[in-house]
Length: 273
Length: 273
Image (cartoon, rainbow over all chains, first blue to last red; front, side):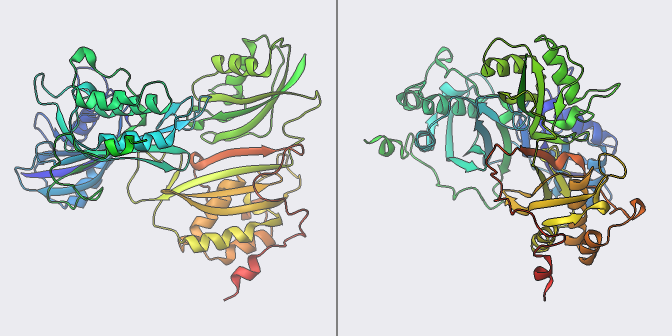
């Protein structure tokens, strides 16, 4: 028996989310079914995070214990032979028995893709949010800069358990232009439930001129009650869990800025006239 | 009663192709169903070209006659309200009654997207062909240059009717790198059945070192019997009918090179050591 770490990618369109449920197709359920065909008999796999229905992943991380006599590569192939077409094991590695994909993670990176168009777009709306009217990209660069740092994100999401801490540290937040898409890349030590989708929704509303810029810093600096939660949730299909980062990996996304002071970032600078 | 030209986009994944069939879901069938709800009663719409099952379009062109009392814009909205999620009318324009989307077209442009990866990829394989092992991009630039010009493409596809001419003129053929994808863009006066998918398949086989470079020019210069057809068909999901070009439009893709002499292009130049 050994513990394995597996990096998983999936198209979330036809799943009711990552986490196994009493009924409905889930990513976890699909992976556990595939593992059972390889002799796995435990109750549940471990995962770095739970993605919502419709959210995709290119770098979800799971772990499980398995009696396996062959190589890591052979396990990957065996697993992929049993996984459905919309889930794939990208990398398989035997790790130390105490490895826990959620508890050991020091950061997560998400990508959110959108494009601007008045009409529906059958070829792009499976993996991106279509927005209209157009947003101002310079404004988005400003809002993203305001997000960086350690803040109380209570207005942007709920913690795993009610009453838990809602302070999170965002290490990187940028908008990139990639062909016809604008992509928001954000990395943090951890994220609250629905946090990325609320961050995107509010930034777009500001960049479309529908909400005042101040609402962003107000939401960050004056944490609200649940009733004061930021309104609006960007749709799930634009979101991809891109990477989970562990201490033993080189952090690739942006040099970790170390511990930031609470509320410290370049936001004020950007707000100067 | 007036004739309307409509530019249509669709995700071909869940269609048995463009053309209406006795059974099965088709793009044409979906459009005709939507039109009937607007009072259209003819037997069949006209279309610029028939795409195969699984092939997408961002710029298919159709035409039909309709009694419509409102604006072109209102017709677009009404049509889109009745079309399924994977088909959309992008532009609607009332045109002269003799307009025929296939007969009047002077050129078509297709795009074929692929990427290189050993493992399956749930987030990319809906709209692109995954190839492995890697192909040589320089080689692809060379093969594309050989395609340009007027050739007998009998080895690459069949004409609409048996016995018809198989000479076609390719005005533009290029491989572009777009983020994680390599995209083959090709424009011609017209295409034979399966021609783009055979052109891609052969180029990739050559660029992977699996077939000799000479096979390309041989296939172009020594047209074969149907039994001598180029083997291999790139899968449909990488292909998009991107545009149909009419004389009244500005040609956007590449300045039309005018009539080329039979077989004339830069291929020989590229083949020099």
